[in-house]
Length: 312
Image (tube, rainbow, N blue to C red):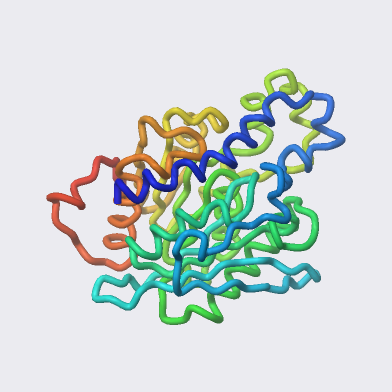
């Protein structure tokens, strides 16, 4: 899996260049143009019209879908079907991306999840991103996430549903799982490089705007939502060289988490968008899915011998 991770690194750096550029936006724009800053759906340039396709990455068993939302938008999504092998896991990953780019930029990640981890993957594109209609905001993305979950419920039956979010997608994932507590059909949650709240992110990403944080009308209060999730195993994947979301905010989320099983995996050389390319990233997900979701114990040697902190 190390080679597969290395192969995706160049694609993953496209969105991070966009995210890094946000730090130089004038703080005076925070209140009046905050949606454009928080949801830079046009970055990198061409992201609204140029969405990479599965065949560009040699991905087979993948379908493109247009999924309607209850408020009249249409969401673009890719569904990658797991290969039918003895190693196939009865798992469907519902993935939520970061705040820049589109799902096409994340297809190399989806390919590893499908081909190496043997999972189904629904890669959902938020409203206003890529080929999805509409304009993004917090309430809209909450609707989008629920729409994606309902689609998985209807179309990937007899599999365990795992919610997996990167950066902004982590906040979307936390809110979705919190809103569906008691449904009984969500098996686990995976979070990567996620912030505690938008208000706490502002001083980190835009230091001159720290006094304007109280004016922000996009909240994503993950630190408040996460403690409500107690009965699902949660995997935290943290790039310790994250230049956008301070790694301390991931640690704060881990500390606030009250889940009966929570696992912390550090990626020492991981930056904000290339943490996924670090050695051990996909192995950690594979072990988590195999042991905590499917319930199979694996060897303490080789692939299963991973360096992580586990609380149960």
